[in-house]
Length: 326
Image: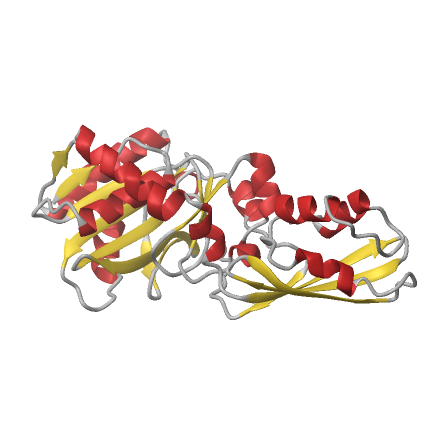
């Protein structure tokens, strides 16, 4: 097995490295990566970002958002947690246990009584410490999982809280599991850096040895290109969200208004209004929003810069109310 340490806390770069070693750079042996990130929300391939995270809060706190190539739910990661990756030739079927077993065994050798639970989770004292996902690329299996070591669980809960307005879609939705941190639950007196070093050492024991591969300048250049192409661009996060409908209630001087948006590929395709307002039907005026990305800045700018004048409220106030919590 070959250990690749990218040295990067950019989730997009590390996802780019997964792509690179699966599809383009064959090291002729299974690859193992262990990496952490700056505060980041990782959206599953089939998820609707608008249903999964509080975008306004993430923007306020500088939390990055990226979409991975595997399915499953949204996860929050930061410098206190880790992601591990196995990349190996073959594997036609999805098999989580093959890659979870060595990690669980390594943890047990560190004094952490981790247990594999169900299809793709690891538990400690009955609470989740790891979720796992897989995808196939370039004739290889890419298996990656999370490890909660000393993650900010309050930030995790807050950032992954969906907006209060109603969204209806057929996307895969996250299950909000009961989670815990390995450091506290197992009583480990060590830093995140020491935990990572020890985990790599133990996985090498379990796996029969591990060589280290240092990324070259050419490797890093190509990985950056892949990160830009697949994991950093806005389209990968927003436009890949499945079609969905939104109901958003706004309280305006002219009455209470329920706005109904139809969104496809992250763009407003239709809009209507219902409510007890008295100043006329604003549906026709709101149609100016059709074709606008369903994002706070875009919707706000469109309303402020348009000729909308409805429901007894000026455009600036209307923009603020419509985009609240976006």
